[in-house]
Image 1: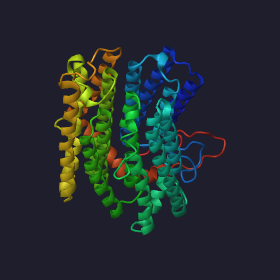
Image 2: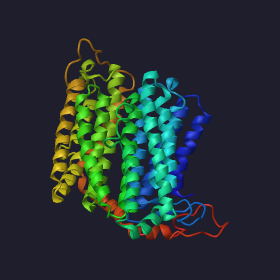
Image 3: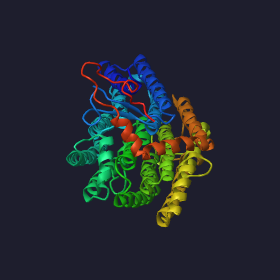
Image 4: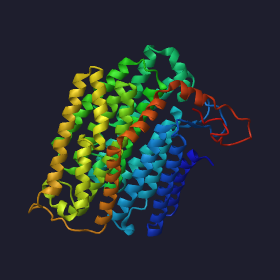
Amino acid sequence: MNWVVLILLVPLFTGAFGVLSPRPSRARRGVFLGSAVVQLLLAIVVAALVSGGDRIVLAPGGWGASVGIVLVVDLLTGIMLVLAAGTAVACIVFAYASREAAVEHPLQLPLMQFLITGINLSFVTGDLFNLFVAFEVMLIASYALLSLESDNRNVRHAWSYLSINLVGSAIFLLGCGLTYGMFGSLNFAVIAERSNELAGDPLLVLLGLVFLVVFATKAGMFPLYYWLPNSYPILPGAMAAFYAGMLTKVGVYVLLRIFGTMFPADLPVVSELLAWGAGATMVFGVLGAVARDRVQHILSYHIISQIGFMVLAIGFATPLAITAAILYITHHIVVKATLFLVGGAVIHVHGTDRLECCGGLARLAPWLAAGFFLQAMSLAGIPPLSGFWGKYLIIVEGVALGQYVLVGASIVASILTLVSMMKVWLGCFWKAAPENGSAPVVRPGLATMSVVVTVMTAISLVIGLGVERFYGVAAEASRQVLDREGYIEAVLAVGVVPSGEATAVSAEDAGGVAK
């Protein structure tokens, strides 16, 4: 059995186990946590296999790349798999601490496993059809999680989430049809090879715009983000943290893959739209955060604003900018998930995350307070924390390209991010609890929550203080993303295997490990 296949099968079978064994219990929880740890180990193994610059190409069923399913793993894929699995472990431990097993909804953990299956498939797939399938698996599981424990008011927000994503899926399907009509295949490598001959063709630009709309919606870019700020806060803290850390980043990952690897760089209209859309996303997102008075809502608007930084780097489309985007994605998944976990802890202690009703949490949970402060400063881009380096590289590249307005927008967004995060820090942790609010009290599970937040904060600190090492990894991942010829050669080298010899071709057997 191939490691890449296991990455998909382990969460799928764990989710199926949860559906067939619906009765919540500590033993059942142990199975889910054990599965999450195994998935993390598998992701680390896969990332290690491609860390030297190799690609793993797998053709299940033995069909050639142009007609069959192809799974492709390079260093960026490995990084994303590790981040997804690590975030899932942290969120599951936090969820266990936040409430007893007896009151846990029996479908919450199985649905999370199906959600992880969709996320992992999005990262490893090498064709548009399976990418569409992966997004549908994610959409169904994520909508079910949103509405699982919601009241009638919150279900309306979940409905907005479902509606806009269904529209995005319909446009995605239209894009797949256009792609097949133009290239005769949905395989990334085949499209990349044949699109070389169509550089500058208006139809290729139109196709790029279609995919820009689809994945800008999935990533939460301006003006297609309105579904996000009201939907994530209705989730339990641990689930909200997983959504905040991973889901929008799947959209950014696909933007990187499509406009870095699949399409030629000669699409200036698309790159300009990406860059200016990113600038608007940064500004409008952070303005929304400044205007809000609830922790999870403020953090949700910050997701939008920070997505703008990542997409701005993709719009710049230079090797240094793509390196900055990957470095920023790595930082943001860890930091944003941590901040949402802290937001969940605030609700756990106070029963609300409305700032006017909170206060005094720094004395009650100093490690939680320290973790939030450090991650908030990192989100704002204070040096030498992890959030600084990606922003710094994006700004350097923006200045080099003469994009002074966008650079100015990113600096303004960073300053306003600092202002709004200080508002949360002062409101929840520093000031005394208000008389009309609920005084913070130690509740069961708070110590475990603090440990999870502390570990995540420590990982973020390691990224920031050891940035030289992480920059090197991001630079190699960037090189592979932009190496279209190497990607085409590696994937198309996997040919048709004679019938009956194998149902799943290992990367080594198929010659699929290529430089």
